[in-house]
Image (cartoon, rainbow, N blue to C red; front, side, top):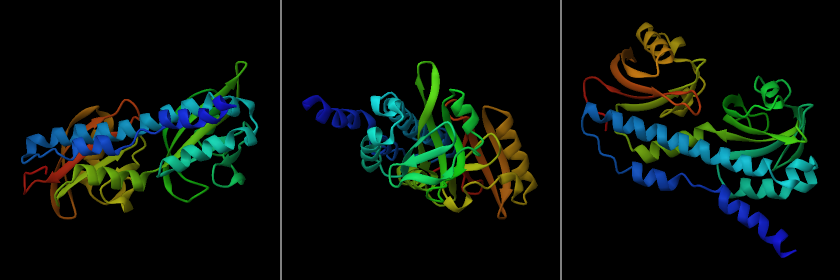
Length: 264
């Protein structure tokens, strides 16, 4: 009985890797010139990957628990709810192979995940890292991190997290503490913006914003793993340094006004 009472606390101690610690070290970066944009870019990628890896590890732990492996919501709901309450900016859910799912907040939902593009892969035993969705439960723009629950060699369900991208961008913006005229953004392989200093640009495709030079730069970023690009947007010439993340497949960039020639 003592072990049963202590187990949720032990798991939660493993699950919670706050962004704040990394943010404090990164916010100290002072990059007065263009060449130091590379340091900001490295910090941007590290902060994001750290956050996503932390959630991924948490979900892996949850998916391996006896409660999740039982397939019985009543056996897992308290642990999933405890994790969600310990970490702002996400919702936790459990999905069945037929697409029905439960959230830690509301229990069984009247919607299905079966029509999500990532769902067939998830039910085929593939981990999902960074699939983009508008959350059916909350309506928020989110990145999916989900782990299949395997029992006796077959997928019996999945534990997942919908990570709210607006909140993640706000945390990153506070950590990087960029000056006006400097932006950070990340784009998925399909061109959708996943993170941006201006959160209202999330899920927009920069190639569709009316700037031919921005379209060219975005295509270049999606075609290469790292480099530099220049473009014009809102009547301002921008320089950007970019690099792709192996974890999510997203391409991260730090962009700054060419007239200021400053990255911080």
